[in-house]
Length: 379
Ligand code: SF4
Image (tube, rainbow, N blue to C red; front, side):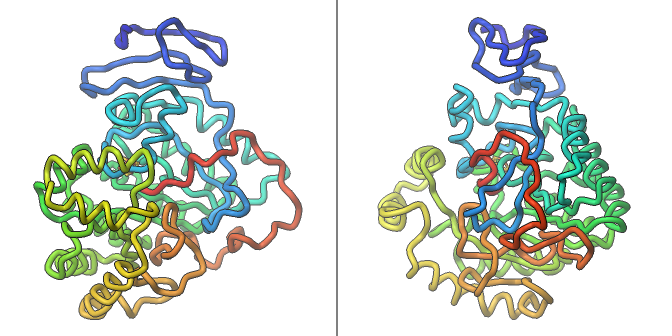
């Protein structure tokens, strides 16, 4: 398999000898600026993915410019979606990135349909839209402009500090449409960060992103996620994290314990056995029956977090801000529907075009294809 070959194929559904069966593949390339990464450039047939109606997600539509993610988080549970492309969910997920090169063009066509209801579109719900590939392909500015010009409210969730590039644009369009912005971070120990999130900008860099978003006058919710039992759930660690998040100007915080779905579980447990073997049996007990931690742990963590939120003034924010892990909620986050989105991470500006998930649109819009569950992962 020659990944550095410049492959071109004008036909949709191209399946080249020795290549994974990626629909719409145009070419697969490696470039010196992005060592170890292979970009599979495809022509996408659709840009908007519809979230199934029974989902608790507070957004009806998602966009994912990329599949696979160079941020390479060991605990990422979008990993399994890569197997649908005949890649593996480990190293291939980290290094074989599918790029929807015609995303903006397709999106503009979908947004121009008379049936488009201008419902909330979420970005960053499966893989990170500001991963390294975005530095080369620059899809997000076109996506942001297309959504804003169509009057569509949207939200972005990311760990990528590349998002700083688009803050002026986000700030400008937020005068026309409601915009939500969320940053995911939970690990403050540098060694742990390098081990578990090797491709992600440092926690300090992500705090700077929160600060820059807030300084631009935009809301910015922080997902303190994932909290790792026995590793990052100590009072000292949580206190330092919440203090830093508050000081950076976050508009809300949601604390989410690690969940281990198939696909992520295997990779995480392998790492845990290597790095912290004494914790393996603890995790096996916690996650014995399901992907989420049991209610006892959840309650324990809530009690631990509550006074810390109060100490840092994160329990006095408006709207849905600063929820503890068990706080009452109207909307669930991907992968953990028992907690809510932090204030600022959803486009709830009271402007036209935002309707709560679950409230029916006036008419049934014509829905683009590609409805699947890929959008239900969390950064
Ligand atoms: S958790 Fe998010 S940032 Fe990390 S690899 Fe998965 S999609 Fe990328």
